[in-house]
Length: 198
Image (cartoon, rainbow, N blue to C red; front, top):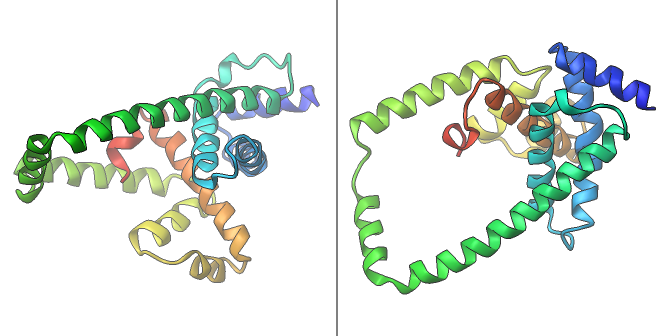
């Protein structure tokens, strides 16, 4: 098994598109289930942890030595992501409480929100949209199409399933894997995905 894992990682490091698709297809669902069992069934947190773990793993592939099974290595990364997400939720809870308590800060935020975007902001948004389009076009398989249908054309998951000729569950899984692939592609190009994605 470890020989297969090392062979897959070697292919990933060469940028093999089929290897990336196999990697996401095989490991996203397993990591999602791993995370779900550790988040009291919170699907949103489990999905986020699985996505972040795969993205972090893609950036750190050169560090994988094959001493443990690839899934064991990914599961450890996922554990770290779950811990970070839990810590982030704790910190946000404190900040939100203090923000809501500060009425002046709330009024300032509302006044800023009422203003339209500045020209520089619009230019940045246009540049980000163009870069996002280029990255979507370069994703393997139909990942780019699936993400465009969902987020640009606002299709339902059922409509995507119909278009793909698959079940609702399979389309949901494909959408999750496509999001992971997009994050990994953005980060590989040196972008903070938070800046380009809503």
